[in-house]
Length: 345
Image (cartoon, rainbow, N blue to C red; front, side):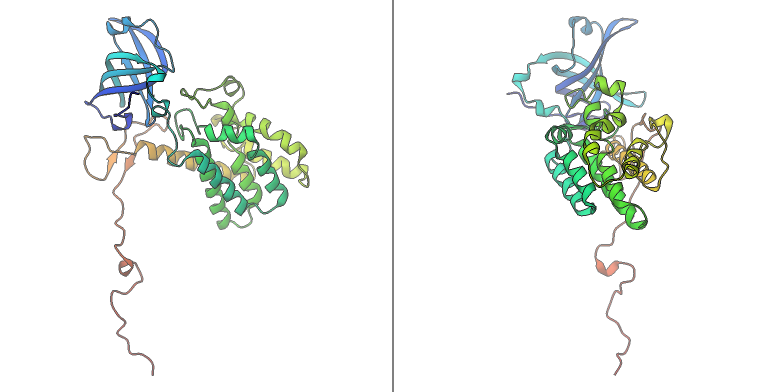
């Protein structure tokens, strides 16, 4: 079986790359000197655009998404984005290697993230009808299986297997922390809303190699799909008033915050605002983490700039951090030596 040695995360401008990647998007286009292939290639550490220029491009009638290719290519920066210019390309059978080399996955195994999420909710949701509701929904076998496989996004944030669970758990934790600062918040409904707010992404985005949008994802979107998924459970729930159920629906419907960001409604309650900002904060932090995961080779030191991030419309910066005290003696308020004041008799 063919093994993979080199990964996209190790690439930088000017470096050569020779190894296997998987095609997730392909298109034949036309340039002045002939046809060329526009590709998006991927391994478990990320994805990268690639080009097959003429005359090599004319050797391939089809390059289809899902095909594994062994390439020799040079990496270069084009319009502030790293891409590969392919010099040689051969197809590799899926039987010759392991698909696990090519599917990005969360650092914490998705099954562990699911367990952590359920344990966290168990410790935070006190009202029995709310507890029964989230357990019935998240414990449903079909929903659980989809959650464990689902990415949190197509390309911008948490775009890997387990990403949806990782994002959901983080949003729940943020909402819990905020509820401790503002004790008048309805923490139970906020926790349930946080746990269910992106449930529809498990149907909006396919969990396979391409992480493409499904037909229902393109036509309906994850917010509508999420409400559609939980409605059968809401119709059977007991001891929750119609007004409280309506509030939960509003929290989920409005979590994108603004109409131009795909939110059917804007937040109109304390809890809806908290969920919106928690969702946005975790998405932005994950985008920053991925963009600043490693410094470019041409930048030395602890501080460095990322490549241009189109989703955020800016370059991102990793600053030098404030030094941490080496031990307890150096912490503010701690004395460096013994007290020299006389003791009372």
